[in-house]
Length: 112
Length: 114
Image 1 (cartoon, each protein chain N blue to C red):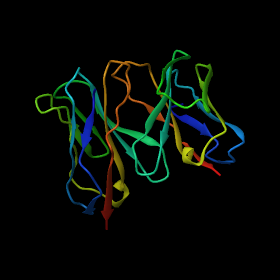
Image 2 (image 1 turned 135 degrees about the vertical axis):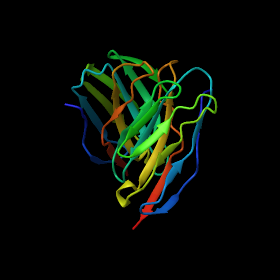
Image 3 (image 1 turned 60 degrees about the vertical axis):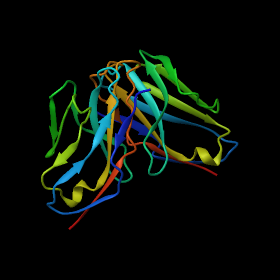
């Protein structure tokens, strides 16, 4: 079946450091790709998305590019802030049934 | 209105109680979802409603009973729950079931079964 793999956390960075969270998905079908963020005690928020190869999603300084050749959708941010501390979920959505499939989540902690 | 509203935010119930969780959206979305999330885990899909009809039940025990009274409302009826059912219950909606649309999530109901 379809699946997604995220890098394990927790990831601890200092403020203004560069962030990369790796995500790879299975290549069965042609999914849309999403990153969600969950702040402590809250629901999930859509952070960014890409629906076809080479698309770049971006929001709040975060970026991710749909790489079909490597089946990847890595999340990056050039300079993280303490307020970015949260859990990040990579989630492909395939046409069959249209379900989002969540990765295990990567917890990010940013220290001042 | 770009929100999914869930009530109540917190719920404590005994194993013999009957309670309901409510979810509401006014974005004209035609697909609605219930998820269960345990601490430090990803959300697990429970049910999907598409155009007010149940389209997916992920083998959820019958003590959880979903209902979609209209296109804006989604309920989850709870009866005879177990302590291991304690979790964050998330509702979400999307334009429809096609792959191009993301989900909009509510902030969840934190359920404790005692």
